[in-house]
Length: 185
Picture 1 (cartoon, rainbow, N blue to C red):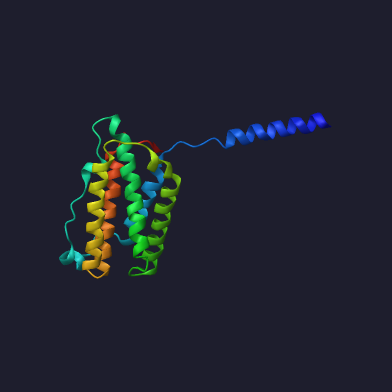
Picture 2: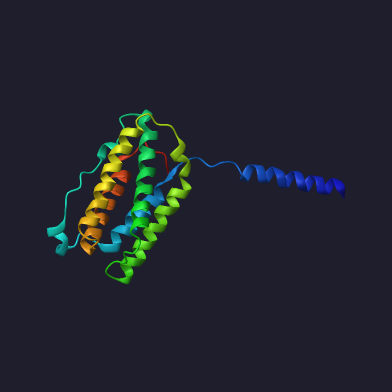
């Protein structure tokens, strides 16, 4: 009987050790794609009534590009930082409800997906990348400009549509251009 218990305990501890192994530090492509789809369907095309208020916000393309595999960690950190910046933007101005219930539901689902991606890929934050400071600076300017646009336009519907347009552009660029990034597919 004691031998049986020891065998069961050994088996249990063996499985506990195997299952508790750390997971790879990887961004999930499926969640990024889902985030893109959700925020895209939240409002569709850029509204005609907002065309006069539309502003050009310079996109930090350099933050997401890599010439070689040595720069992949910097790109991954940029993607992670982008998710954090999007989340921070929504936390600062979380009162926005949108034009209708469907939009609000999609907006909230998008926020949940962004938060989940941040939590699941948090280990990327601690990885070392020599080229990240310049990427981070570009992202900081970009998101400060988005925040300023929101404030200047008094958090109007059109201001949030500009934000949505910029987030869509950013996510699309990340998904389309970064073949070197380690995505869990």
